[in-house]
Length: 352
Image (tube, rainbow, N blue to C red; front, side, top):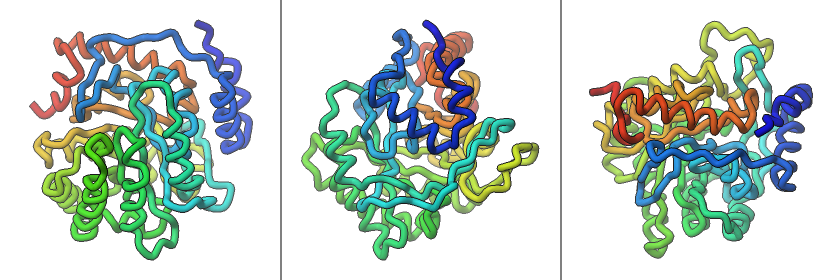
């Protein structure tokens, strides 16, 4: 199949980043982005939370903020996608410019600020979905909200019936005060309230509840989060969100911009946190590994560190949608080369 990104990628690369993103969304909505030739391999199948994932490679939150392109994105070969972040009320996010491409570092810096059309619009979009596939919803809080926990509770109540899983996002660096919810006492209260809202839904509408954490955590922070997560009885963790750090060796002029850094420089710190959370939870909680994945070896490293599933986003900007199938093909080979018969068999192998 022709790799159209070879021709389109350079054009998108000279456009203003948000304009390029908007054009990509428009092309997906109009059906102008070709679907790749199907590739699945039995070794890549994952069963988790009572759901069957055709493969472990997912799309991270942030690309489709309003859940309007779930069907088109599933057609790009992902095993699952995550939409959002979505807040109870619509909000414009931070002022522009707020998205910066770091070409030499294969990275992005964003300070978007949860720009989205609100949870009612998200629920409407997902409620119309026809194509089968697993779609998670990433929940955020409105900026300046006087009751942040109530925002997450509202998201769970509104979206539990249309989401295959819910992710509580307390780790974006672009909403003031959000990361403070990762502290032991506040996190415990938050998870208790959101779980109660999720459990109040009828049984078919009680999706797994996950927590998305930051990479910028102290050892004490990680220990507290692990203990609270296990005690609360949530269903998993997503490690990690973007970082406010700037790893050494970055060369792009935009590296000094404020915001969350994603892409290649995030791989090592995010994988370190992932491994720590697997160890601290003693493998009791399924983990989704996200941050800096550009190749199958990156994805496999996350799996061996403890991830049952992985997600990518930033690498698609530099490599195009064909990257998804390339990662799947090479990942299947890596799993078999180590003598494993499934993704599940390789999860946490580095800890054994």
